[in-house]
Image (cartoon, rainbow, N blue to C red; front, side, top):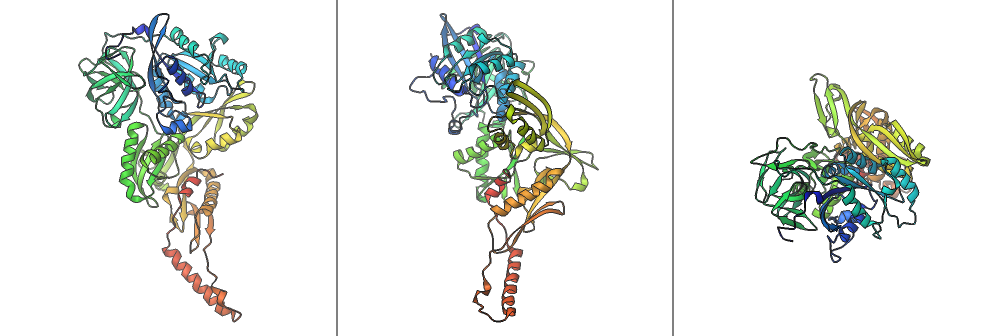
Length: 605
């Protein structure tokens, strides 16, 4: 092929993405598309070909979106098909929105055995807002549990297509793959744009390569980008040389120029993750475009937690690991913090709970860093009385003195839960217990309901997802989007061990939950903290008021064992002596909190 590959006219380019809920088989279907277009040879083929990380393979989820170009001949014409793969999980919805903006069409994949689920709908709405052409596909038709008629009706209700538009397929057996490729060519419009206008290209993803720096993936909307040209990133204002540009096959394939409608990559020697932002516009330095492409926003973390090295000496090593990880995942933000109980560490911001788990697992696997994670929490807006100003608090221990506070606002989300009708009562109870308000209830079919709630984000951070799965026996799917902050009656709950406050266990909770939560944490810590030589009181406090107390009894030696008979005063003297020793011990004793205790607070039930 070489640098001067056969030129494909813009009308023969198709850019599309795949929308699906987790585990509806889009990575497997992508594998089949790659095989049938000959993009990947039989020798290179492996399952989930587009997922690079081991953790993606093991969990069967896509974390990082991928893009790949396929060549396909149809009716004696050559076509270029650019697949921009997207992650399906709610925590990565920002990457999904940017990938969707770079396409003209989307394959909507629905599992024939499970039907439509919450994230399918939220990503579908994103696609419809961007005016994409939707091609509905009924996947996993080979499964014995497939219900094609019912699920077909659901799809028709959702997007208003006709029955003939829905393509039955199976990623496993390869059924329907040719029909999908033909539908992509016949239904999805070719890119619109002009090569004569100034260069306008949108970055939709970036990956880090330890030899070459950051590789940005982009889609050209207008103009032409040439190798060696000087380019400018619109929102950061930085200029670079396009050292290498090219298209994304299974490997990066260099080219001399990319034209309007193309999808490709640029290597320009960028070494810092924060210089390449997803959604930014690339333009030419000599004749720049006037406006950036719409829709650029900085990604905002939703959940915050402290991460501390188990050995305090590993602090610098943890910093290096986090910086390297940030190059690969720009949505991770962190800043140094210290804790009395855990020493030096970092306060990290994540997009959601799954994102947090994955970062923790990647630190362990890729960098051998074992970390202690504190109780996750969200960011609050705190308004002060005298100064009439607002401060943002990401960590409960930073909360100002209660006497100075006017009020606190916490972030709210709109939650969508899709479940079977049998579990509606249980799901409603759970959401109301988590301070949710029911906004809407829509029957998608006779036995599937979509419930919409408004609830505080902080209630989801704890154990919401696990409990939702258990009350619905795994049938509920959940999706959320932020809707801003609301005023709430929040107070700080402190945990004291042996009269010393453990700042890593502090939490901001709603006044109505404080007593029960304090009691439950104390009981849980009593189980988990090993007994010492001295008695340990565990207390939950709101300000100076103790709301709950449990005591871990001391380990005692039977000092009276050697007294056979004799006077009671002798025994009492020995017991008093022991009691004084325990009291002395308690004054100097430090209580080590085991790692499980920090995590157990998340799963209190």
